[in-house]
Image (cartoon, rainbow, N blue to C red):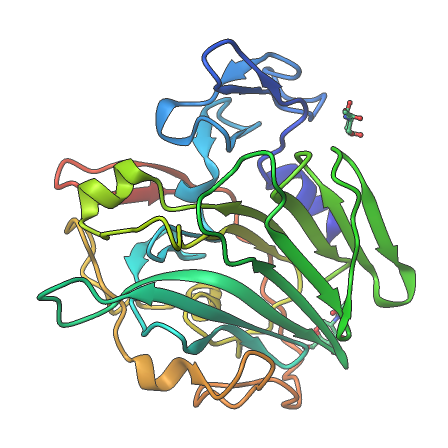
Length: 313
Ligand SMILES: *[C@@H]1O[C@H](CO)[C@@H](O)[C@H](O)[C@H]1NC(C)=O
Ligand SMILES: *[C@@H]1O[C@H](CO)[C@@H](O)[C@H](O)[C@H]1NC(C)=O
């Protein structure tokens, strides 16, 4: 299983910052034709991109399957992009499977004259077996790149991870490994045989606030998480906003190709708290059927003419 996964995932070997502030990345699979060749991240994701070792294209981590970014914009396991607005200050199950449950806590604000909240993912409550892992962005007034705004705790105990690249925490009995991919505000979290994610803490910038009318003030820059997930052991019963999109043959209810396809059905996904597994679609703790989903092959995504995002396998 692991070998299959490794050959298909996007791999990042080296990240170097160029004069323009954009990062350079390369493929770390020695069997790829672009092995070790540095490529610069595109402007819209200058700090977080990856090379697809199969196609040798550079891709924004927020534009590939498993992404949960912005206000939250998902790319499903089926390659379909959609928004899920939810509601601020509530928790929603994004993945629910017999052995893994992930809730996301939404923060946000109601713009003047709006009928819904602008929302972002502030933290994750991850449950696997009897273990609980928290990954969150701290509340920040004015954003400062030099300050770490990431919070982690495992089984309720706060974790300290030195602020330097490659600083690592390991919990072998849980199969858990956490590694900083940048000195601050970016980590990978892996539970062996279950999932891997990369999380970046980012603020809402003045520019974004202006473009989208978020009306962000100096008291709160709404620091939040941008995420990309890979799953290695989902069952065919998996549900949750993101989880369901990995089921083979899943038919997305969202309108594909429009600029803002929306996933509705908030009531099905709301959990009563970050570490509760009581959303209506919950599968956590259910008897597994024994059917595991093979990791989907990588998809390449690009902007459709309609303004939406389209991914192809
Ligand atoms: C971090 O680890 C990677 C992979 O092992 C290595 O290539 C890189 O040089 C390390 N970076 C630092 C700053 O130690
Ligand atoms: C994989 O999933 C099965 C069924 O959901 C579960 O029993 C098993 O513990 C999982 N393995 C890991 C490593 O999470």
